Image 1 (cartoon, rainbow, N blue to C red):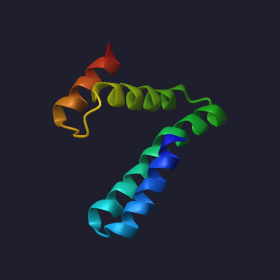
Image 2 (cartoon, one colour):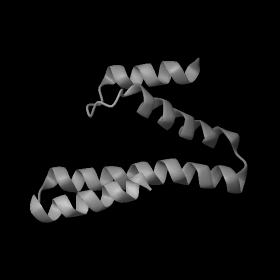
Image 3 (cartoon, rainbow, N blue to C red):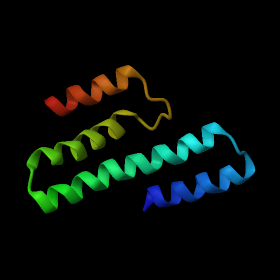
Image 4 (cartoon, rainbow, N blue to C red):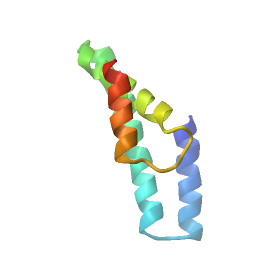
Length: 85
């Protein structure tokens, strides 16, 4: 639900400030939704358990961001370390 609201916000922002950054933000929200939801749908349909790791990785990644809006290599490394532990 939050991604749907974010996509609406990006669509509104695109009408006010058209440009590459807003377009990229919209596509990144779409990609994130497809990766997260798509992996869960595939897990449910196929039963391939490794697909559940994508959901856990995304959860750890978002949790490690500490509500900052900047994703750095250190953030990704910390999320991967938390996932493997």
